[in-house]
Length: 566
Image (cartoon, rainbow, N blue to C red):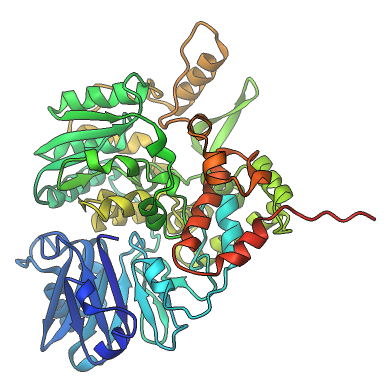
């Protein structure tokens, strides 16, 4: 990977058991912790920083901002000094999408801390006899002498597209949970991400906080671009960040999504490039699989094959705005319209959080049954995934006040689309608006019935009254139920043009580029599965093949099921 953080709870000699210091741009060494960082933009304001002094050593990896009223450009130096004065409250004040590694004066405290929502993963293992940690699952995993594939983790991935909680695809390799820190001998939780809903001006507060968050990110360096959809989330970034020169969309030039994005770009005087959906969109290149870290689908890295055509230094996107501001994981009441369940926009008064999360994660019952029939895992998928989701929900109960917030917290903790950001942030200075501390606070204080598209759009219109001049092609109306009804009618009426999917068709591309023969010739028995499930198998095989001999067990599980007669 182009950017990496790697460390041990030990001295430099112990660090060099696993890595050469020549691999890193900076290495900070204390009495109980040594950490290396590789980042070509190290020291850029708002980005990765490092500091070593008599008062301690620190690395902040990723996007990070100190409080607006403090005159300090180095987030690592700020954190050392603020932590000395305020302790863990300093981590409440640090803003952004980051990991922070800190050793205090004389080595009396050392830890690795996530941001409040774990938007940057930290992997760790104790298998080599010392606690090793880092941001690249493969390089941390390479320190494990005899890795054992984690069957439950792999099954979750194949059926849900995400490994839940702190597991990975390997038993000895773990990751920090949401809102936590890793110490030499423990994992400890913080309480920065806890729902405490209250009454306030939801629209006005969101508008104010969005403006502040966008101002913070406007100072990021160099030529600026945005990954732009025709939807709601990325357009507020485009409208408010001065200097965005170029916008990029994956899709055919005549696709509804691309035409809509091009109109938005013209509205805000930005150039626009459409990347055609060809082999590059699905091809499982190494960088995509590495960005998914073996725990999520590389499919979410929509732009991966096209980064050579993204000619900017800083890139913006609207990822997770729908989750934090518009209630993506909220269970909504539905009504039956001509045999189709249509959301009304109202909260479900008695939600089934497991069923809701299965739907949001995109669980496909028929495909999972077929996967179980074609492989040797010998696990009934429906009961397995329900139990896995129930366990993941229970793990977040202490952070949530109510079923709706518990489901949302579980969705955020296990967000499948994070590889999208990982891949960008490995190549560009990459802003992650939705992880702004003030916006997370708004999310935690706002009741689920007010975390809606309507609230978000009203806030955006307070910032820019013209932001909805061009509506998304599949959402011509203000209410969700009218959009759903029109979409249904268009699909059923021969003379009307149906709304198109925002993303290219996986099945068509998989067949067009003959990926069954090219990538699954040794697994003919699974070639009848849906493309998405085949892509998951390709991902997990590629991830294991990259670093370990443990793939032998994986291949045993992927063999055809042996059926007995009697």
